Every structure is written in C-alpha cells, then in structure tokens.
Length: 71
Length: 432
Image (cartoon, rainbow over all chains, first blue to last red; front, side, top):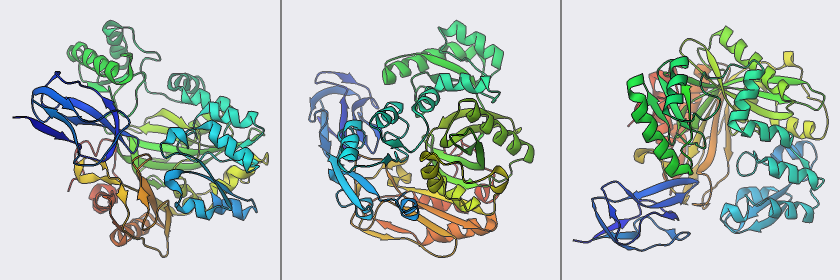
C-alpha cells in the first residue's frame, strides 16, 4: 500500500534528502523543513521505498500537505 | 530601542521586510524603509540592503538588535566603512569572540577559567583518549563546526569512547560537512549563569551583575532572572571578576555578556561571549534601575560610561519569561500562524516587551520569539508571585505558545526554591 508522508508543521522545504527509488527505514528523514530558523526533519513513518517526492527546495508547505509518497 | 532614542531626542528609522509591513515596530518609528522580501537572506540578513536604507534615510548610526547581523563582524566593519556608527563593539572584538576556539584561548590567557579539554579538534580517537584521560570522565564530544547540540555525545568511561567518537563524527559530518570533534569535561547538572558587562572607549569596564538562565530548550533560554538564587557569594565574586578581566583583555567596548557554566561545587567555566545586547537585558535593567540601551547609545557616540561600578547595585529581583510561538506539548515545534487574540497583563512590577499584536502574522521566516514577560519586585518571592499571576492572565490565541510550559516552570518547587540546572528539560522536568 502506498503511504503519503505529510508535513507535521508549516515551513519551507530546506532540503530534499531522498529521491524516488531510495530505500528508507522507519524514522529516516525524507525531507527537511525549515521553520522559524529551525531545521525539522520529516521522517518516514515506516520502512519502504520512496515512490514520489512532491515538493522542491524553497517551496512553502502547510501542515498536513503531502511531501512524499512511500511505495 | 526606540524608547531610548526618544529619551535622548534621537530620530528613529525602522527597516522591515515585506512580511513585516504591518508590524508594530514599523509604526513606532519616525521613519521606516522596506528592505526586501520575507526570507531573511533577502532583507534582514542583507548588509547591502540595510546599508542602502541607512544611506537613503541619512542614518547616523545603526543598532543591530540581538538577532540577524548583530554578531556579524563583517557587517559591523561595513557599517564603519560607510561612515555610520555601529552601536556595539568593534568589529575586531566581535570576530575574536565569534570564533569559539579563539575565544576560549583568549579567555584562558586572560585568567578566565575555561572547561578542561582540547583547544583544537582532536585528530582521531586516539588523540581523544589522551585528552579524555587528562580531563577525567565523563567527557563530552562536541562538533567543532557545531551548534544546537547536534553531534554532541556524552561518554562516561574509556571503554565507550571509540563507539561514541565514531557516531558523533558521523553525525557531525552529515550535519556540518566536517566530522571534526573536540573533547571537553562533561558537567553534571550545571547552571548557566552569565554576567552583563559594559565597556567604553576610555578602557573603563564595569559589570552589571549576573543573570541565571538555566531553563533552556535546544540550548536557547526560556526563563532568566537576577539575582541568581542560591549563588554563593564567593562564586558570584569570582564570576564578575573573571568576566571583567576577560573583556578588559580584549579591549571590549559597549554592552556584552560573558556566559559561564557553574558546576555543583561552585566551580565556573567560560562558555562563550555574546557581543551584543541580549534578549534578556530587561532583567538587568529592572534589577539595577539602569537603561542599557541609553548607555549603548551614549557609549557609541564616544561618551564615557554613565555609571561607576560602585553605583551599580542589585536593588530588586526580576524574572523574564520568553513567550515563543512553539508547541511545548510537541517538543517545542514551531507554531507559525496568525495571532487571533492577545491579552497581556499589566500592573505593578510587570513589564512587557512585545513584537506582536492581535492580527499579527507569525511568519515561518523568523525566530519564534513573540514577546517577553518581565516581572520584578523588591524580593524574589514577590517577583515570582507577580510572574505566576502574569502568566495566568496572559492570553495568546491563534498559535501555540510556551505559556503553558512557563506556568508549570514558575509553579514548580525546583524553580520556587531556585534549584535549577541546564539539563532539567531533557530530564523531563516541567512535563505536563
């Protein structure tokens, strides 16, 4: 089942760490958001392969926006 | 800042980004210049744009505040070169103290106690072992390029060093692009105590006593107070004497703060120097009855310090609580948004420094500090009661804030008894 990874806070995409096809473990950072001078990783909720990255660096995301999808 | 300028009959010019068009500081100024887009790099962190605004408005002096470029020696130098007065220390002093390794070396040479450890990054785990044996376990490994606690690791015994060293180096490499580490003695439950200092062009240096700032998250302060409770007279004397000796050794001018860690036995160690006015300066102002910003302006214009050391007395007790747009129930995650409702207490012994009002947007682009709540009284218990009451009455809606957390701190027996240390939050004290 594909699983959407959502931003848990509002912020700006600081860094996209993974790319489609990358394997991640539960808790691995997929992207890093920047909000109020803090860098906050958005982590994979479970192990799997990254299917899609929905954001690019510099983009503003709202809390709850889908930032990536796991296979 | 503007209050102090008005008191001295000076005109004020604000700079602001697109995001801050409606901010209170823009209206409060006599004049205001927009300097760029919301991201700080394109506005508040752009030395060129700030200098262009200063020239356009024919500013004679720039106060750098306490964030953004305030500790950037290149900015201070650029201001100098533009023929404008920088309200702060000389660029050279900012540069020296901004380099943490050089600062440590300079302070040790001036007789200021520093934490035992390596003065340089250690070459490898073998070198780390030698230093650790010298300073004694437990030790802490710190990323040379680090900050915010990233890449730090506590090591309790020699057998654990190799594994911890490899892990810390890997994390430092990932976060900062260099795996260089240093080794320092690890202090158990230390307090963060700092000394406000002030120097003028004639070489006079005074201190304005200490502030206790142990309650922190991510190595950033949440609560500050003065006088520091339960600080032995001998420790206090040692701290203020060392702070003055340290800044005198580097020919420091204007306001600055020497930060120290104080261990359980009263031993103290230089941590770093902030070469600017601090967020928590109102605490010292209320305790001493002196205006630090007015003094900054006078000293920057070449006048001598307005006070002698023996006139600077701790007359009152004061506490500051920082209200951040952060959610304490989620590990202090940022909480940007719009402030729907803002009700702030007022009354005897209450001072509010707020950058926001109802309707203000709290942007993702800037620091989450919304406002500072300061309570003061003739005694510490009176200041504590006033702070507890002020926090109860404070209402901020629309964003999550640190207010619920601050209420728990001020109600706690540890705080009431003045028994705080820097590791309390990570140990889960004040959890709901």
